[in-house]
Length: 384
Image: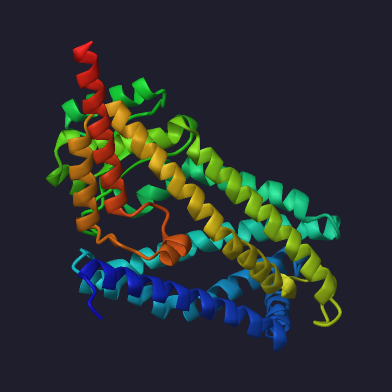
C-alpha cells in the first residue's frame, strides 16, 4: 500500500480506536446477556455491607460503578497503550517515558472514576424518584456538570497533566491579548502550555468559560513558530469563542445526552423483566444505559463532525480577516499539519466519520483564495 507516514499513522490510530470502542461495547453486551452485570451488582451489595452506614443504595451504585470502570479499563488498556504510547513513539511524536505514560493513564482513570461515580450518584436517585421521566432531570444535571467541568478545565484539570505558566514573551503576550480584545473575546491571560514534556506536536488553544478563559500556547510552538504564525493560529481559536462555538458544542453535547438518556429509559423499561432486574433503578441495568447513550452518541458523530468542519472553515476565514496575514496562516497550517502528522488527503468517508477539521490542503487553498480576493479588492480600491 503506497501510503505516506501521516496516512499510515492516522489509519492505525483510527483502527485502534474502532477496535477499542467495539471491544468495550461487546463487553457491556456480554455483561448484560450473561447475567454478569447482576453478579457484579451482588458483589457490590456484599462489599457495601462493610461501608460505614451499611449497604445503602448509593453505596451499592458507587461500588458497582467502580468495579465496572475497572473491568472496562483493563479490557481497553492494550488498545490505549498501543495508540497512546506505541504508535506515538514509533512515529517520532512521543517524548514520554513509559512510566510517565502509565502515570497519566492512572490520573485519567481517577478523574474518569470521579466523574462517572458523580454522574451515577445523580442519575440513580432520579430513577428511583421518577421511574418514567427520570431522563429529563438526569439530562439537565449531567449537562450542567459538563459545563462546570469545561469552566474548571484550565484551572483544575489541565494542570494535573501539563505544566502551565504565564507567558514570559511579553511582546507576544500583549499582541495576543490585544487581538482577543479586538475580537470581543475577554481572556484572563496568556500561558505557556508545557506539551514538550510529552509530545513533539504543537498546539494552541483558548480554553475555559467566563473568568477561567485563557490563551494557551504550547512550548513546542513557541520554540519554532514566528509570532505572526502564532498570532494567526490563536486568531482562529479566538474566532471560535467570538462566534459561540464552544457553547454551541456544549448545547449539541447536551442534546445527545438527553436523547441518549431518553433511549436508555425506554430500553430499561423493556429489559427489566427479561434481565430479571429489580426495576429500572437496579444498578445492574447500567450497561444498558451506557450502551444506549453510546449508540446515540455514535449516530450523532457524523452530524457533530460536519458542524465542526463548518465551524473550522468559518474560524479560518475570521482569522484571515482579523490578521490580514494569509502568508503566516498558510505557513502555520502547513507546519502544523506536517509536525502533527495530519492526513492530507483523507477519503470523504473518513472525513465524514473521523475528521473534525477540513484537510490541510483545503484550508490552504481557502487561504490562497482569500489572499487573491484581498489583493483584487486592494487593487480596485487603489484604482478608484
